[in-house]
Image (cartoon, rainbow, N blue to C red; front, side):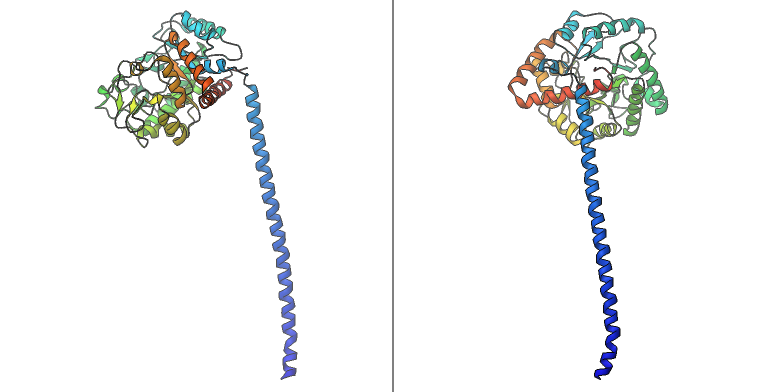
Length: 403
């Protein structure tokens, strides 16, 4: 019995040796794998740090390109004021030279030719610092909303006709229209209209949009595809665009330009009209214009452009938009006359807008004075000014308006 057990011990010992060796090899391989994995992790972290440094370096280089600005210069960049599209206006000249306003909108209607408009826009650019040239804009949508109508400018059809075209055709047409604007010295078209009018039956009652057939369509898909096509066509011609009027003016009956107390009781953060802007943001829309209607289900206490809930809350935080935000007109619009010009400007910038559109240049001194006063006494508001001016200057850098 004892001998038999001893004879059997050899295979057992041999088997033990084999298993032991296998465990050692496995351990070595495991250690090697672990070390390799650790090296991979270290390498990945190193790459991430390197990438972060690269991005930070690129951002720093971008920031270094930006001209250093005083508070007064930063605030001036946050205003767009008006001038008649067919003539000069001394109040507009003063806004640029004395108050360092960085953007202009050409208003009314003009029958001047493209070369004649270029003389005017060159004059305006000549008033601005060479290293902070102007954004010069107009409402060149089509149909009843086309400011520039002189020789060389195409006659643009209204939104519904544009919306009946294939997006590819609209993009090509928008490129041509953009080339006309660019040749005339216009670098910012306050279009496309991205509003969703409730229905064809409701359109005649929808004073700001449907009544004039400014909308591309009544369904989300076609509005998104055509607004995107318009923006891309203009971009290929070197012209900036802004999708308007967030979060939509298609459900109101009053026109904020000529009426007070305009309210929207239907639009909420999940509405299709809001999702249209969300999809345009995903497509890379560079700018969005905020409406001054009051939205009962979003921010019932203030006109939308004055509301942090709507601009910072819904547009910036929920929809994730970090591009340029411009208000609808805050000077002549009847909807905002209950607030002084200075209050309007402060409220708009505090809400998260970057550009205050004030068609009336005589209101610029009061607006800028109150914004400066607020920035000097309120650090939180001063930071808003810094953020907004950075966004404006980033756009200008991309458009080669900053040296």
